[in-house]
Image (cartoon, rainbow, N blue to C red):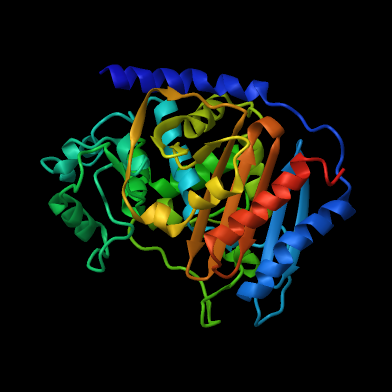
Length: 390
C-alpha cells in the first residue's frame, strides 16, 4: 500500500519542476547551425546509404529544421519537416504518457497487478506483476519480441498465461516490446477505450500534434515516407499484436518538436502537465540510466561514452540489475532524457535537456546503428549548448 501512495503523490506534485527550467535566450545563427548539423549528419547518411533524414531542433522555444534527401527514392519527393516517419520504439514515450494520463485521471493505478485490468490473466504470473513493472521492463524477463505463434489477442493471452518469469518481478530490467505493449493495452483497458483511440483522440490533440498517427489517414499517405531495408527495398510496417504502444507511431519532425517542447515547458492543461512529469519521473536505476515511463534519463551533462553505452543493443538485450527508487526520483531540469527507435526501414532518435530548453529529433528512412544516432545528436546538442551557433 505504501508504494501505491508514493507513486500517486509523485504523479500529483512532480510537475512543479517544469517551472524551474532555465533559458538560452539569444537567437541562433542559422548559417552556423546548418554547418554544425551538416557536419554531423551528412557523413552518417553517406556511410549508411540513408535516402532521407529530417533533423529538428528546439532551442528556447524556437524551432529549426534541416532536411536531407528524399522521402521516397521511387517518387523523388524531398524530405520536409512534415514528412511522416516510422519512429519505432520512440512510440514507447507515448505509451508511457497514456498510462500516466490514466493514473492522473484516477482510472489506472500503476502499482496495481496487471491482471486486475485483464480478467483473462487472473491466476497467472501477472497477479504478481504491476503495471509499473511492465512499463519499466522489470516484469521478470519478458522477451524483446513475441514468438511467431502470437498473432492475435487470443494467442497473446494464451502466451501471457503460460509465461513464467526468469527473475523475481522488479529485480532485472530486460527491454521488451511485449512488456510495454501490454502496459499500454492494460492502461487503456482501465480507461474503457482502445489504446489507439486514447492516443489519437485525447493525448495527441492536447499536445497539438495533428500530424502524429498510429493509423495514418488516407489524406496523409502522400506525406508518409517509405523506409528502406538493408537490401534497399522500400517498405512500411504492419503492426502486430500490441504493436501500437510498442513501436506503432508515425510522426514528423515538426510534431515531435511540439512533444519535446511540452517536456520542457509546462503545458497549460494541469492533467497533461502532471502526466508528462510522471513520464519523466525516475522509478528504476540501471547503471547510470534511470528508467521513467518511456523516457531513459541521465544526469546532465552526460558523457558521449555513457550515452552511447546506454543505447547499444547489448544494453537492451541483456538483463541488468534494477534498483527501485523509493521515493521515485522527481523530474529535474539538469537531466537528459532520450529514446531511440527503429523499424525494418526507419531509424529515429529524440533527446531533450529541460534545463537548457534544448531538444533534438533525428528521423531517417533507413535503419542505422544507435551509436551513430547518439554521436550525431550529442555533437549537435553540445555545440548548441556551448554557444557555437550564436
